[in-house]
Amino acid sequence: VQLQASGGGSVQAGGSLRLSCTANGKIASINSMGWGRRTPGKSRELIATFNTDGNIVYADSVKGRFTISRDRAKNMVDLQMRSLKPEDTGTYYCHMDFYYDDVDGPSPFPHYWGLGTQVTVSS
Image 1: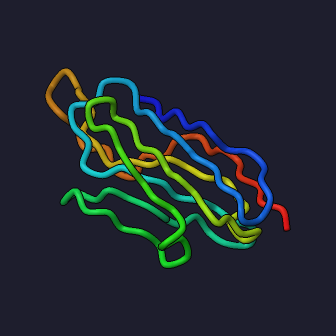
Image 2: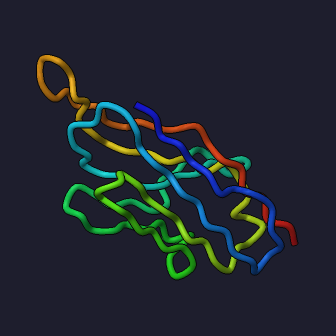
């Protein structure tokens, strides 16, 4: 199973970027899916997630600026980031909690993270 993220880059403060992530492989079902990030001096944090109930949870640091969307049929989530700040600089990761389509039946696979994509916001 792979989580393929794209869309990172460099932008000036106040600008926008859009990240996209697609999950590929033997996926039986997805419980939750979203985005996290690691910024300098901080540990990795969840910032926008479709949780198990299908509700969206945002970190306070991105509320009102970031919007997550998804295409269930394509196992895809996007993150539209607006009004970016220098403190948003960091590595952004797609994550999901899913069931692997194993030969013996679905196997739980929580806390699965993809490779990150870099976002740099200059002042």
